[in-house]
Length: 263
View 1: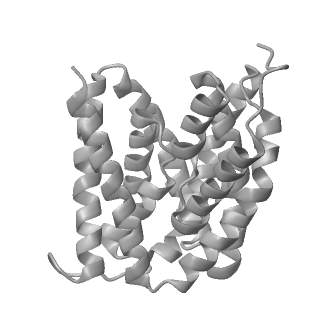
View 2: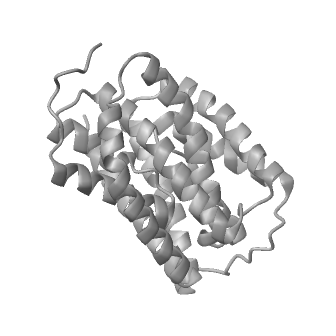
């Protein structure tokens, strides 16, 4: 499939997409696909397959830059072997999620995702505000099984719903073990990169990546990553928990509405 001759995004729109995706990467470890995919479909316009392939390529680049920046300030967040365990179990979970995807209706998928994220985001917000139960304390040494379990769960959700999975890892560690979101952001970004690489390779071989648009997004995205990282490091721990929880609360409500509107 040739993409030569297709119209390009305007400078203003490509700058907005890059800056917004960069901010999400730097601030809360979200790859940026939730902005890039609809932006390419609506404003370029690109087919869904091309939009997803281009988004995955952008996520690899942007999350790699954000990972390097965050890791230089906070370290990896967890030990390298534990990070490798999270990533490996996430890859396995993604295959399980893809298997489940063929056996569930879209309505039930969206409802399950919405309920899961709603519960987790409310609990995280409760911890940030000091209400709704005891505050989990991060000891830096959760049981080894938790790294595999949370990685597996995030991979399943990634395979089911097409999300990056990295932020879901941080959400799990923050809710159940009290990991500071700042410390978990390098973990989220590393998972984003590894999860996106496989899809990027697949779409790249099929010729479904708009490499020129990816390159045009990078300068604004780097500015967004720098701003988002600075804000993430500046905010107090509970402040960033609130931002993180509020984002997922918004996504839970939005996804739930979409599910209920489906026949």
